[in-house]
Length: 301
Ligand SMILES: *Cc1c(COP(=O)(O)O)cnc(C)c1O
Image (cartoon, rainbow, N blue to C red; front, top):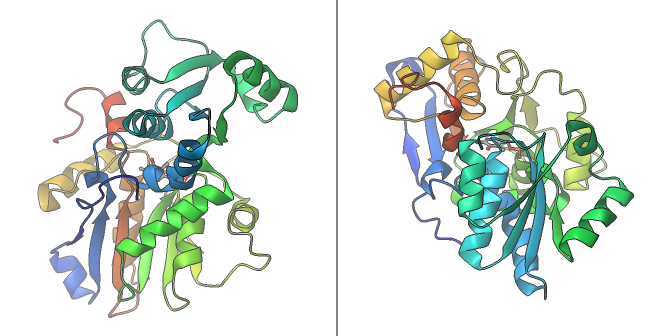
């Protein structure tokens, strides 16, 4: 790896409820790698960063919204490795930058704001050419690392786990992380994805593109009823759950991804979805910086 990931350990959660159901639940704390470049984003970026380091231009260009964990991680990783970074941001430039974008600037990322309409067509050849004219040569990383190389990088996460886990659970945005896990998992391990967007109906096509498999293996499952209204939507119940997880396990979660994933897992344990003897590993994919968009005192951590 290009970064020191030795902080990312596995913690088992002591809980009577899990014990009663005769399952074990552990968390792989990828959030502990680093406060900014935490979690799955670093892994998804791995091969792009390697390519950029070998290039003559040493530049990465990527896309994201005002609170994008991906932009924050890219900016930090590039600055750490001595690469240039350019972030194309969805929406007009606001009077006051989000905490995330401010962090990106501090890490030396050049930001360019484009309208939502233009952003929606950001893979259009003419637009790409205009970016080349403006910024010169670069390696393009699609939003969220949604690319087979991103999935190949995410597969490296499995090296931090063991074959003893029967189920590995992750929050899903672009599906890139899940694709990587699926490529590196043993056939007897079940990979469980919790989509945080509402109505993601193209997951199979996404996984085919990301893995390059014509036929997907059968050892994955999506729990698609835990989006809490849609991307970055939240309810009082979700916030209460986050505060309770902090109190009970000192486990800090983010409201966009990991809280929904962990809520889904605990709910499914309650509903006897996991067979007795299951050894469940939840990925803490990071993203805690996004909690800064919440009003002060919403969370107890
Ligand atoms: C981006 C992100 C995800 C989603 O990963 P995908 O590979 O896009 O599915 C999950 N958790 C966190 C914290 C993230 O920032």
